[in-house]
Length: 111
Image (tube, rainbow, N blue to C red):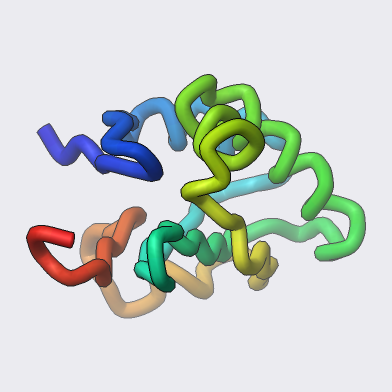
């Protein structure tokens, strides 16, 4: 239902991100923000984990690249950039919220 269109008009379903991100050991939740910079979609990812950021970042990046459309937008069309991968302690993202909103699309409508 909440399909995300990335890069050159490629549809990516939120459950694809869920599978990729939650396959990384120790990740308990995440939030992804998508913005636009020129022709590129910019992705900022924050994950809840007890692991050190330096340990988990490359694993998360590799896991995101298992999503075929993401890998294509990153490596072939160069229309997607993962701008940041940040780690926060467990419970940080969902604190005070009844339901986590995992994907936030801040791109202008129609862009």
